[in-house]
Every structure is written in structure tokens, then in C-alpha cells.
Length: 454
Image (tube, rainbow, N blue to C red; front, side, top):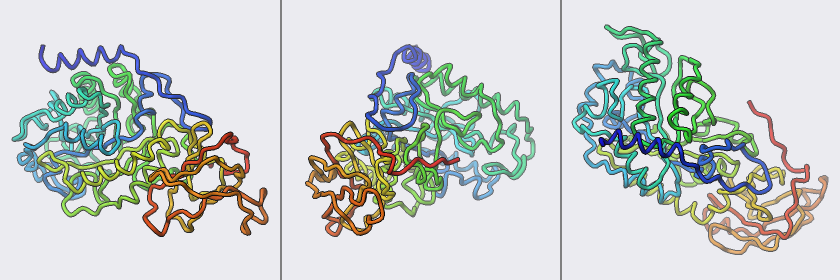
């Protein structure tokens, strides 16, 4: 049996299996579940995004061709230079697991149209580079060995295909090149053929991540095709219909901050690099503190988080990025219980500087902003916990119910106060305070209310 036949057989068997349902959340609110094999999405929560292609050779940006306004002829030499001889997918997965991640999303085709798998629809692919091997096949096999869910990114826009109706919009050529035959129907046939390959040649796939549908074409048959072959695959909202989940990017979507919790499935995405998503020489990088707070905020509100790294053209992840992922993992490990298998609970307080999660009678207070004082005020809560702990270190934390001057015109005019936090002794990024109650009340209606956002 050849490799493709073997993997197709594996996909068929996987489609027949039943995934263990995720643990039901304790009291609180959060996004709806799908009620089928896609519910793996709500268990894994934190994933690794990989942007990798021939653009890594240039080391500038994954949209190198578009942002530099290059013709196909000017961009083509990158393909002849792509030879990732040091690519070892197991090392990528090692790093993902060290970071506390549970799944991986891989760019199979970006806006340049170059395919990172051995597509039968084009010669513009990784197996025609000096490397000559199918990178997706190697990654898929490594993921299957580890039972590590694999999702696939695919750009709807394509700057290489002669049938794509380029019109100078974002992520397109300014105009068709000589010899092109713009024809949307023929191009969409090409897309469907490639989707069929991706969903049948590489074993079980857990997600399909569309991007750059700049022509805004709508056709639910594309997602139906994914579901036909990969019933456990979650599908995002950037393709040809609304899919299963939203995709707020970086810090641009105000709904991440405005909402107390996500009432529909969401997967926020962010990159280690401030300028780009691919490998970039001399990149400007986000601080560990910014990343920790960003991850903490999204997960605590019930969303998923996809954190991106761009491998180098040789297939390795640079040591600076690898070290960041390891530090993220060291932060996440001690506070993981406050972010996984919990319910969003920020309606219990009016304090907008914190986000709350809960499990039964345990409340977790997430400091998602730099503290202004050594105290955290949880008005209108007035119940005393049995115990308070700084989850990051295991240190006990002082608390009381205080009659405070700033609350003189509020009801109640006192509140639960967590105090004497060591904010002057060490950085407070990513801090979580665990409060254990005998009987934690439900939201009283005097805390924050969920805002309606478009």
C-alpha cells in the first residue's frame, strides 16, 4: 500500500471513531459546543500556528510578493532557493508541547499560491524545489504518531494561478499577467480539487483555516466538502461561508476586550513577531508579558488561542522564538487549571481590570492589566474565601472584606479585597489568584453585564 492509500485508509477509520466529549464546564457562561467530533476544539484550546513557505527565503514577510508588488517572474527565484534540509517536524511538536499547546495549524498555501504539499493540480509546489519532498506529508505523519491534532491553512487568494481573477485588491496582482485567463469558475474548480487532496491524502485533519477571500465569494459547498471527508474538522469564518468559529487577529478586534466572555466559538490568532507572521530577520518581537496577558485574556473568556511562529528557510525554528515558546510554557504550566475546563465568570465583578473564571466553588482572578496597586477589588463580592493563593508561585495571598472610601456610594459599600500582592518585587504579567470558597454565589446581577458587539 502506498503512502497516500495508507493515509486515506487512516482517515476513513478516524472518521468512524467517536471522540471523548469534553468535560462539561462548571457554573458560568461560554461558547456553545458543537455536540460532535469537533468538540476537540474546546479541549485543546491553545495551538501553534506555522507560517512557512518560499517567502521565508526572503526573510521579510509572508506577503512578500504582494507587499513588494512583485511579478511572478521576479518572485519565482525564491522557489529555486528553497531547500529546508534541517526540517524535522518532531522538533516543532516538541516545542509546541513545551509551550503547553494542544494542536497545530499549518499554512499549506499562502497568497503567493505556492503549495507546501505534493499537489497534483500544479507544479508550483514544494516537491519541485531543490528539497523535493512533501513537507505536509512529513508533518502529518509526525502529528498522527503523537495524536496531535493538525489543522490546515489555505488562502483563497492566489497570485500565481492564471485563472484567479486578479483585480488589484488586497493580496492580488495589480492586474492579470500576459497569458492569464481570469475565470472564477475554473479557479474555484482548482480550489476544490486541492481541498479534496488535502482532506483525503494526509490522514485525519482536525481543522480547515481559510484566509483572504477578498472576492467575497459565497458557496457552502466548499465547507461541505471538508466535512464530507473530515467530520472532526472545525472550519473558520474566512472562507466561503461563516464556518464554525471567529478569528480575531492580533489586537485589532475590539470584541476581545469588549466582551466579558465569548458566547460563540472563537480562536484569536497572534504572532511572536510584531511585523510579520513568517521568519523575518531582525524581527520586532512582542514581549513575554504582552503575550502572556493576551493568551490569558482570550482563554479566560472561553476562546481558543493560536500563537504563530515562522520557521527559517532551513526548516528550523530560530532559538529566540523557541526560547519564547518555552517561557510561555513555563508560565502556563502552574496556571493551566485556571484556563482549561473552567467557565468564564467575569459577570461576578464590576472590576474591568481583571477577568474571572470558575470551577464549582473555586474562582480564578486573572490580572490581565498591569496592577495599579498591590490590591485587587472584587466588588460586589462580599464572601470570604477559605484560601487565596497566587497560583503562579503557590504563595498564600492576604484578603479581607473591606469598607473602602471609594465604595461609599455603591451597594454594597464594601467588597472582597485581595491585598499585599508582591507587585513591587517581581513582574505581575500573567498572574492568577486562586480563591477557594465554601459556597461561591452565582452572579448577583450587580457585576458586569455582557456587552453586545457586532
